[in-house]
Length: 239
Image (tube, rainbow, N blue to C red):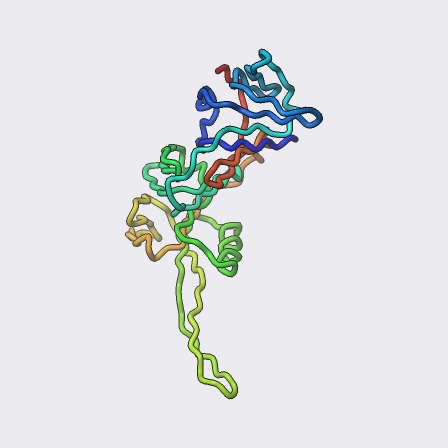
């Protein structure tokens, strides 16, 4: 399996953007790089229009493709992980009636089924919280999860010095059914009770995913200018 790093505007339907007039750099495994406009990209080959004419390269002999990057418009505020392992940094996330909407840090918006989403995190994390997050989101839950961040105060008595008060944080998952996610609240049902939880109280959410067959391995990994990592299945695209 070859992994291709593509510095490009992040979007799931990435192949539709490859028709831009910007120059593409293709780096083969055993020869010099080729620069030109993308003509065709399939699961087997890439074709570039270069100054020396049309050049065709087999993907199995290609190290990576690189596109001019679109700089992010701001720092990410939401981190989304998809069921296929793709990791997206974004400005916002909303969901309702089985559909999710993600606004990327480069300004583009993508829509996808909520069943394709694994987790959504609303806050940056310390290494300690990141470890708790992984343990919770990889557990065998029987329903959707909302994950709260709770703080507590603890007094530490230090010999020959003043008493010190420290703040400790921990993540607390609650199981139920996710109904809606907006910019301000998460609507969540626990048993027969429907709750509207302010997003500021949440570390994030995790969608329940029933056991299913393993996904096919990706043909490429796209790393965009904002740091998102997309696992791609390439079909056939003529530009």
